[in-house]
Image (cartoon, rainbow, N blue to C red; front, side, top):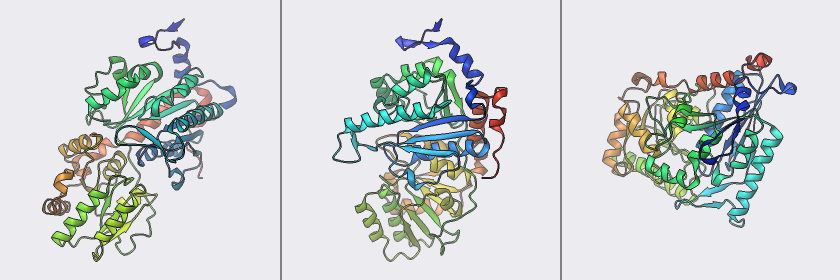
Length: 429
């Protein structure tokens, strides 16, 4: 007997759900749970940073959980990873503004790169033999590269979880993209749960997409992924101490204009506030040089390219000016920093939707990129930062339970008596 899957998808054994609800019964691994995470990482830092945050939380709280992250990030090795968390690097690709992809190396055909990625992902899954797979954002992976692995793990009784940002994109755009690849049908066929990394009252990532009721029922809203307050601080801000506004562009690939807008406002209004600009590792060389040239003679401005512990820079800052990416937004809320968001408008509207909703709730201020290019408007927005209320004064604290929720979900998936030792707190490492 088997359960009929929607729209002709491969049948899934009825026995699978009962096996999963009781935890995976592998007698050789009663004292551990293996979690595989997938992060496609075509551009920026967001996907890897989100996976790393979840992985560290699980490893820090459960002594028997081992996590392996599959990542396409070019700079995955620049980050530190806790004990029992590691990563496998797959060949990198870049998404172009026309929606197509190209290999990082101009000498390698994209079809060859995609074939390598697919084979590495599947062979890693086979060797690691996970109890659980957590997929970040892309339900079937880049260009469907995850499908062979999803089929393989489904037949090995691995629990399959899709993790989505609380905002994906404008629903019309998302429907168009997903329809081309038959994503909704694959989501129904493979995933046991869909974690939404935000509060239910903030935004539904499937709103307006016509998602079937069966998928809506699988949504589990975790709350935002809160960050712990850091205890060690970087050397780059020695002469600023904690009296600066942090201006951050995340990965930086499209953050140059935001930096130019801030510098123009700073110069035009002769603002006295110290500023630390973090350009990001993916900002093009010519943009870096241009920004440094524009900042010449501005004694209260410091510029660095990148720091692998972004949260420590936020913690020391008086306030934050940034785009509206998910991870930086979570850090702003967690560390209770007054913030001005300048959301990316193209090619996705994700940041605009997030920033507008956060401003509506009083958590942050927002200025659109076109308005930010007016030095008078930008300097006025910067001046308001000093007197606006903090996120926690606006109710942010109640929204930041994402990691706690995820830990309880994972504990519940594998809570049979044989695995009791797995979920004890780890000894000091």
